[in-house]
Length: 256
Image (cartoon, rainbow, N blue to C red; front, side, top):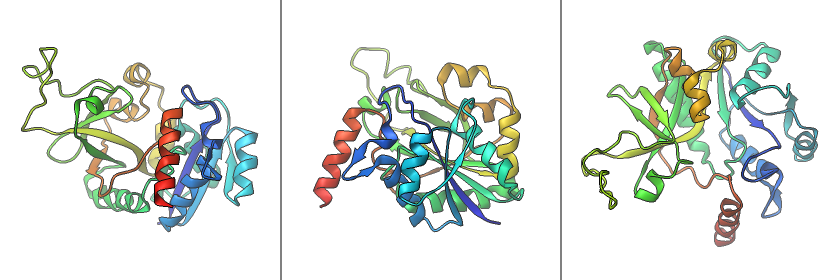
C-alpha cells in the first residue's frame, strides 16, 4: 500500500482570481501547500492541473505536475483522472489536499490516512476531518461547511446552512447556541481508497452536490460511507479571499 497526495490546482477562482499563484511571503500560496504536504512523508506528492501557468510555477519549485482535462467539475474528478493514468493499486490511498491550504499541519494528513486504514474493516472507503466552531459568526457563515455525523463517526450530511437547526435557540433575532451540542466545520481534505475514487468519477453529479456546491455530497447520495474525525490540530487559514491572504501575511510576519 502506497500513499499519494494529490493537490488539485485550478487557476480560476470565484472570490480571488489566481489565488494559488498569489505571493505569500515570497512564495506562491501553492508552494506553501506543497511544502506542507511533503512534510507528511507520504510516498508521493503530485499537483494536478489543467493550467499551463500553474504547471510552469510548480515546476520552478520542483514539484511533480500532471496535466488533466479542463472539463472536470471538482478536484476529486481531476484526481481520478490522474489515478487512472498512474494505474494505482486498488488499496493505495489517495489524499485530496486543496491547494489553498498553506498552513495545514502535516500531522492532519497522517491522521487522515490512519483513520481511513482503521475504518477499512467497516467498509469505509473515504475519510475526512472536522473541527469545532466556537461562535455564531463562524456557524452562520455559509463559507464554513457544517457537517453532522452519527455515533459511529459516519457523516450524515454536509451543508453550508446551519445543521442541525436549534429550533428554540434560533427562533429569535438574538440567537442562542445550544449548551449541550457542538457545531462542526468540515475541513476540506479527504482520503480515499484508489479504486473508490475511480468509482466516484463515474457517478453522475447529484442534486445535493449541485445545490450546495459540495463534491462530497455525491458520495452520500450514492449510499457510501464517509468517516469523520475531529482534527488533532487547527488546520490554519485557508486562502479564499483577499482578506484571507492578508491574514496569512500577518501570521507569517508574526512567526518571523
